[in-house]
Length: 189
Image (cartoon, rainbow, N blue to C red):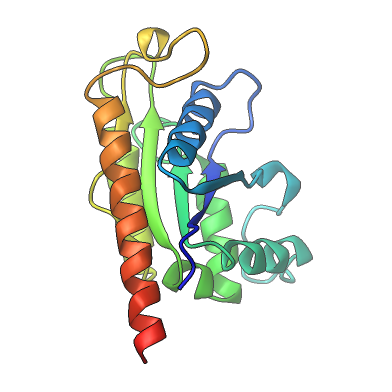
């Protein structure tokens, strides 16, 4: 059984200076503090047209699915757009689910969101959890909602806001524990 847990990070925002990219970086640091290997999977490198069932499956979709299936965990960090998940993230989910679902079944999934106001992305995190669970993903119930982004990070980019910081620790403890349980079960069979 491998003791090193590999976690992919997907951000639902491609915008330079995005507070969710800032949260993604802070969570990657936190995952590494917990002994995991963290890797950013930039959705900008996997361009896909707006999903349409009559279009041919893009090669980028196949590449993304195969890449995500190599991880023990995947953490989605998403902005909230009008009380929902952003179109980029929904489009990626729609395309990848038409090709294969191994990337949903294999890794353990986590969800996080950052907002400039106090609400911390609760609406979009609920929707992401619903969609991922419906596709067969094992989603950790602990979610990292981070409101008031302007004061949530240290000058070095670490997540310092409470309770967000404690939620991040709980999320990574749960992902690592669950990943190791799954690996031990697979080794025993």
